[in-house]
Length: 263
Ligand code: THG
Image (cartoon, rainbow, N blue to C red; front, side, top):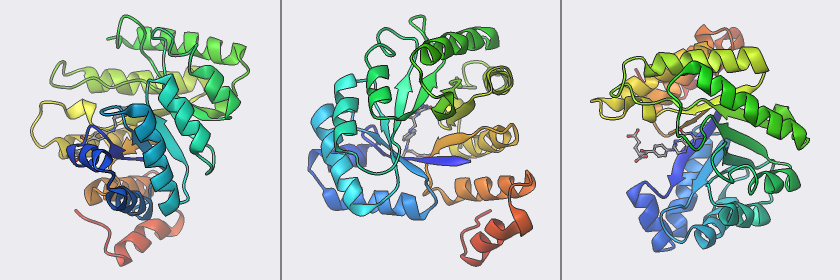
């Protein structure tokens, strides 16, 4: 599973402060730590302050520290454009497009110009749909737009958007069904963040971890998570072992020897 490290996000108070005070050392430390912990890409979100200028500053700081590709987490075409201009490492991911007003029209040309991979959310101007069928319909519409624009669907990740269990006890199951059907009917990759599902519940990390294990068993392709959470990374390694994705238990044993497994 592709791991997208979520820590460089300006909604986290310490990150917001580091961006505000231009604490490059702090940003670079988090970039290095997430990479060493197994992140394949680093999500960058600077929405809380001067989004466009901060996007450039964070990306330049991160690129001095690590070599892995980045995931621009923004709904603002100007911030995405600025980010794409300064990134020079690997294939950048854009997080995200959707059927919401102008989210395709304004962002898709950039995604095509820079040959990015992209996360598409199953949401439209009516918000996040409650049912599986509505999410499938939005996915179909998104795919039509992408195909029409010659976007390579191998570079697409659909995020079926999990809603909090605290709102409706069926929300995780609706997400699982949506993800499985989207993969089966459209043969595209899927992704999710882990934090929405546990909103307003106690012991959120516990709920997030089991959510991740179920998603992995249903073959979700990527996750946006905190790779510095050792228990989450233990869940990734252990679920991969159980799912038959770890030949001779090599990664599991390597993590064990490194003292990285935490139960
Ligand atoms: N889907 C897509 N993009 C997303 C999300 C998604 N981007 C934003 C978000 N959800 C994923 N990113 C974060 C970033 C930080 C936190 C949660 C989600 C967060 N971090 C705290 C911290 O690090 O201090 C707390 C971590 C914890 O206690 O576990 O809250 O769903 N496409």
